[in-house]
Each structure stands twice: as C-alpha cells, then as structure tokens.
Amino acid sequence: MVHSFRACLLLFAIIILASNVSYTRASVKSGNKIKSATFLSPKFVLGPGSVENRFYRNVDFPKGHIGIKNFKAEVIDDTGNPVPLHETYLHHWLVSRYYQRLDVVETNHEQKFEESDHISARNSGLCQNGILDQYFGLGSETRKTASHIPDPYAIEIGNPAEIPVGYEERWMLNVHAIDTRGAEDRLGCTECRCDLYNITVSEWGRPLRPDYKGGLLCCYDHTQCKVKQGFQGTRRSLYLRYTMEWVEWDSDIIPVKIFIFDVTDTGKRLNGSTGYGPENGCQVEYEIKSCSSSDTAVNECVDVKRTNLTMPTAGYLIYGVAHQHTGGIGSTLYGKDGRVICNSLPTYGEGKEAGNEAGYIVGMSTCYPEPGSIQITAGEKLVLESNYRRDQKHTGVMGLFYILIADRTPNRTSLSQAPIHMHVNMKGSTYAAAIIALFGMAIAVAVTVHSRLKKWRGEGYQPMLA
Image 1: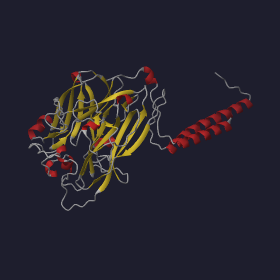
Image 2 (image 1 turned 180 degrees about the horizontal axis):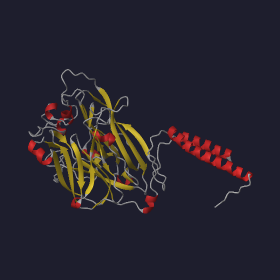
Image 3 (image 1 turned 120 degrees about the vertical axis):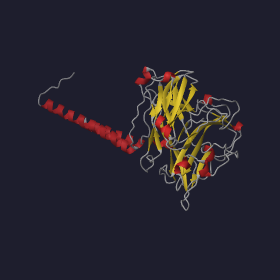
C-alpha cells in the first residue's frame, strides 16, 4: 500500500512540474480557465519636460470570442523596471475598441485612416462623438487600483454576431505621459498649465479661449514643459506594459456593460458636434480655483462639483471606481433619494518608489457589492459628485466615474458552482512544490494509519467501523 501511494505521488509531481500551471479554474461547470498575457505598447522616447500623447491602432490584444476579467497597466523603462510618477507622470492610458475594414492594409500603429475605414465600438456611457468611449483606462492610480471583474461576470468581446461583415475587431491604445525630471514646476507640468508649456493655440491650430489656463489642450504630443535652467537629463525609451486576464466565452458567463460618467457633463447633446468644446455635454476636465479665507471658514476649502445624469438602462452594479487627479479627495455616485451607489476615495503615496510616490494619487478605492444588492432602474436620476481640495489652484482636473452593470444576477445553481481562484503569487515550480508538500502530508498520514492498523491487528484489536 505504501509503495502504491509513493508511486502516485511521483507521477503527480511529474505532471505538475511539466504543466507549469499559469491559470486558475474559472468555472466548475464548464472547466473554463483564466488565461493571462502581458503586452508592450510601441516604444516612446521622452526627455526632461517632454510629452507623449499618441494613439496607437491595432495593438496586441487577445483574439476570439472571450470575456475580459482584468486589465492592468504601468509605464516601464527599456529594462522592464517600473518608472515612478515623479519622473514620468502617467496622465492617462486608454484602450478603445473599433472595427476595421479588412481590405485596408495597416503599415504602422499610427497610420491615419478615413472615417469610413473604421467603426467605433464604444462603451455604453452617456458622452458622445468619441469622448470617453474607451473600454479600459486609468491614470496615476493605475498600479494600486483593483480592476478585476468578479465571477461569473466578464466584459464580452469578439462576438462574431456583433462584428460587421467585412470588418475585423481591433483595439486602439492612447498613452499620455509627461516627463517631469528637472521640471521648474512639477505639479504645473502634470496639470498642463499653458504658461509652462508656452502654448496659446491648440493641437489643431485654433487659438485657446482667454480663460483656458491649463488642461489637455496645452500638453498634446511633442509639447515641452519648462525645466530648470541648466538641468541635464538623458532621453530614454519607455513603454506601457499591460497585462490582461480573460476566459473563453460560454453560456455560464454574465456579460457586463461599461458606463463612464463625467462630472462636467451638462446634458447637452447636439447632432454633428465633434471633439471638445462648449457644445458638447462632456467637457472631461475642469479648473479649481484656490480658496479665500472666507471660503475656508464656510466649506473647509473643498470644491464640490455635481452633475445630474439619467441612467439609460436597468441593471445591477458589479463594480465601480472614480478617476481623479492630484488634489482629489473622493467621488460619490448617488441614486434615487440620495442612496449611495458607490463611493471611491484616493490613496496618496508617501515615498519615492514606483507605486508609492509622495504627493501623487497612487490608487482609488473600488466598489464590489454583493450580487443583486445594488440595482439601478432605467431612467433613474443619478447624481455624480467630485470633491477636490482648494488649498491651491488646479487646472485640467477630472471627475470621472466607471461602473460595470449586469442585466441579471447569477442563479443559485451558478452561485454553488462559483469559479475557484487561488490568489497566490507563485510561479509554476513553487506552486508545484506547495501541492507536492500537501500531498506528501496526506501520504504521511495514510502511512501512519496503515502502520497503526497493522499493529492493532497484531495485538488482537479490531477497530470500529462506522
């Protein structure tokens, strides 16, 4: 008996070591497994004070009819090391889905296309005409903000029934990074203050309005922020490294819709309007003026911005998170009668290492309510509130809110068959060693019991059997 157990242990060890497991089981019923892959954006090169804000088409992305479970990203150097925010500030990264005509040949990631060559496959949010149409995206908080989608939910992509005939599903990546090494005013550079960039016209050659003091219009691609006189710094190659987790799509997965709300949304919707401007409801960014002594006495020097929104469809909240810039102190999405749907608060860094940079938002808290506990009805009036400190002026700040909505909750059967995940940071060999150790303990117990039984029989004892 002992020799048989030892033979089984050896065979089990060989199988585990050979497989080098890189997934966890996602569904007991279907045997669906979570897959993971890490990709790099095209290389971009930054020197002190310089800006990268490009759109890369047809970037690497998992293929097929799948369900996205997680998406993480960060800026790294050409040796693979994470770059801290006080050197290269990640203003934002965005990933958008689109359909590309099959007869159009792409020669590089930045090729310009005719509008008829592609069709946007935007999220379910309220903004229009290419504004906030991304599926994924964060900013400086990206390293410490949870983004996984709980089981049995996922973001469905690659469904053949949704892809127009003659087109292919593809993905576009936008990376907006600002090198602040040696910056004369590091915060001013990250907030894109126009005077620090010496910008008076937009990327498209249009004069900026007189009251526009800073924001996206002043830190577009290849602009330059002021650095300290005499500062010397090398140009370096950087990448956005993004890691994804997904499962093959099956009937047990419940799809979720992505909604992105903007606290600057005025509700205006005009046909034919494009890009940023007063005619569009979603302005994306806004300015915060510093408070006076009287303001401090009344509202503790806090800027509170609110907007009213109407939810177009019904569903259950699966996930929620806000996006804010430096100075942000939290954002809340309210439902009917003031009930809190989700409250998201920032975490500020306290050190110098990547992921803990002092003075920067390095994470946002997230909402993962119990399935079915928070329902939003079609036509429900929502209120989005974004709060910032006003101890100093801020330009180009944002007050966005991401939520994931499912149209149904899992039934009791699917709950009893909930996917199994082991959130253990182990490589294949370490994972195998742990399994073997547990299996070995079981063998030891079995051997001990076997020996005791032999002893009892030799001494005339008969163990009781239930």
